[in-house]
Length: 190
Image (cartoon, one colour):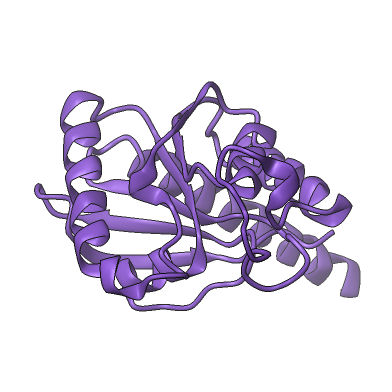
């Protein structure tokens, strides 16, 4: 009897996993959803004084754990049916490295996704620019998954939630790129 119950539970879990996979891939194919992602583990807090965007050695970067985490997120996305995507990243090296390690296609860097940790006064304008980026990308490529890799402050400004490093957020947006709702997928454990 226990074996039968265990088998039924395994079958149900497999069914729900397939449903989640189909739903995530389908959501990203409807022109109303994006994946927003916080860069993976980069030890420390903020960036060192005097950092420069075009010099990774001056910034806080991914550690071994963060690189492994990004690879696992990319593998998890593949199991969800997302094999390629349009990927945009903050110009910070930890975001670019995260985006590249997802292994879902070429990565475009944009200041729209750059951190405003050092100057929160730009949050409103940058969030509006993010909405425009989303609007344009979904209009031009409504059936191609859109993945945006950015920072905690940007995500919190856009969806009102603080998320952990490597978390993926499925965001439903309106035709203007404005946030409607979200579902957080915690970074896969490793």
